[in-house]
Amino acid sequence: MTEEFRYLRLEAWLLQGIKAHRWREGERLPSIRALCREHDVSKATVQHALQRLEAQGLVEARPKSGHFVSRQSSPVRQPVTRARIEAPRPVTVSDLLQDIMRRSAAFDLLPQHPPGDLPPGIVALNRSIGRSLRRQSGQDFQYYDEPAGSFELRSQLALHIARRGGQGEPEAICITSGCQHALFLALMACCDRGDVVAVESPGFYGVMQIIEQLGLRVVEVPASLETGMDIDALEDVLKRWKVRACVVSPAFATPGGALMPASAKQRLLALAEIHDLAVIEDDIYADTALGVVPDPLKALDRDGRVILCSSFSKSLSRDLRLGWISGGRWHARILHLKLITQLSSSRFVQRGVAEFIADGSFSAHLRRLRIELRTRRDRLIQLLHKWPGNIRVSQPQGGLAVWVELPEGENTLSLYALALQQGVVITPGPLFSASGQFKNCLRISFAHPWDKAREEALNRLSSLLASK
Ligand SMILES: Cc1ncc(COP(=O)(O)O)c(C=O)c1O
Image 1 (cartoon, protein in one colour):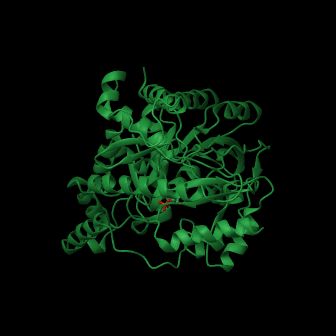
Image 2: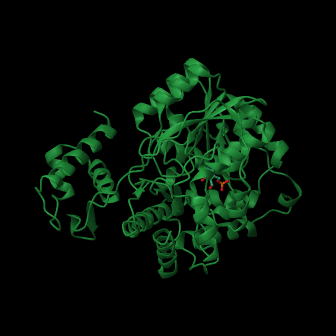
Image 3: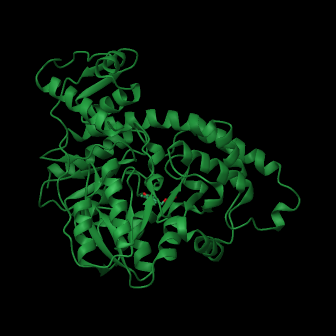
């Protein structure tokens, strides 16, 4: 039985028990150890099932006491709006995205809010980069690094990917300036002007910008907020149009944190072989997993058609501008394109980050980050419970945001303008679709702590909705 099936089966058993009042509100669930024994599963499987119930607001974890049935709660309702499939078309990304990015706000309701203290992981990272800078040799500053990037960093990344069951070899990796750069190189390497690219809908606007720039065409494939790209819909699309590449995020898709099941990943790759597509895997959120870190799609790649793209922007620091790409059969072309678009990456920064990973500081940082993110996600979902009307909220198992679906007829583009007058910046749903779908949806991030000011910003949004 696969790991995925085990935790889903346990989750269903617990859910049924809660519904049947085997454990009443406020009562303690069996301990993790008892669940492992009774269901003959690992601790990780039990934790995964419990975390999924926590995300739905049905179960609460109390430090040192165990898991309890929540006192509130109607389960959170998952968003249901499904994208329409339309014929491939060129993309024009709205100027609104530029406006939001200029405010540095794609991930914060309150971009002007004073930042808090540096977390310990960032302090350690800065120390490591500082040490590396002090060791810079007299010659380093006069030469460009090789386009593939530092071998030390690539070796650390290869180990990091291999730990998740991926194929990690330093020779197969190229360092980039962030994941956006990696996605750009990937699409440039495997597509020609006019080609059609399949994307998740809703999906990441950064990919839409690249498609626009490269003169490609897009076809939107409906994606579920729980399981990601709908593979039946993809199959249908592939039968109707010649598609050259498909961009997917199996590990916590944008905007709602969907996690693609292993069976869907296998089907996706089987379709890619039949239709000879490049599969571009945006893996940027994998390290923000709130439960088990999923295997990369690249781990299933048999013939070098998966291009894995990622970066440290979501797991460590956006300011590093450091990412990576494992380009499979397009690796040589990607190296050439890296040379053209960036020449090389900074040597002392790469060395500092490599040492930060090698001495265990990155793993320690990720452990703290995941605990923190889980608390922020749960708090956000709790706060959203108080919003007026019939709203639906995704329950991400990773990533930094939830997708909120307001009642039909609401328009989050108008809400954007109203909220801005109150100093609050939202990311409206139509930005996540090449054809402007999802007008009644918005993304809300939990990348930042829920302090008083941000909670008030959420309440202001709620009042704006109530007064409309
Ligand atoms: C899904 C996804 N991919 C890629 C990127 C770009 O990441 P980077 O900052 O590493 O360029 C982002 C940033 O928001 C993202 O959300």
